[in-house]
Image: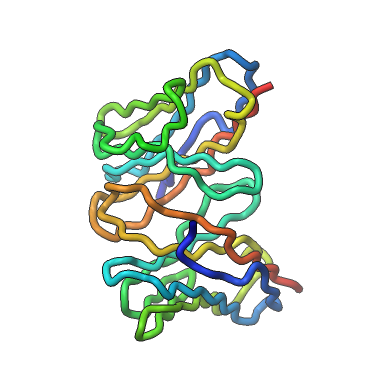
Length: 114
Length: 113
């Protein structure tokens, strides 16, 4: 079946511009996560959605980062006034809302800020 | 920091079983053991998970010791496409409330012809 879909797969932007990254989770998965992975590093948690609400935003690195989810499905991660240190692979994952359910990841959006 | 310890690298001959060990000596009673792998430029791929019992699916088998302090992921017939970094993660996953999957360094598995 269809997995987690992310778009675009690659994004190059100039410093100071805003970017929007999109995630389509697996149908029926009410839990949705955003992570980012810098080159050669582990995954850094950003934000978690339960349905359309975000009970855990603790990983967002600054107020330039925001995310929303509508209809309990698609989510967008927005980075305003991008900086070079924002360059990373942004990964989205989704899961069922029950104990132990594993996360299923998309292939990510590779963001390069020049 | 990751709560697991894995060897940094392993080699395996194509067609043979790959046995990847993981130590998680401080695992709590309600923490699951998850295995993921990541192939270059792709997102982490879920493989298998378990709480206490051994588990098997179409991709792999997971053997968890009785004291739950270690586990082994078994790929029964490794192929070249199984070359990847394999991550062992322990987590209390309350159906998504914490997002606390901590990916450590993992084991770089190289399957050789």
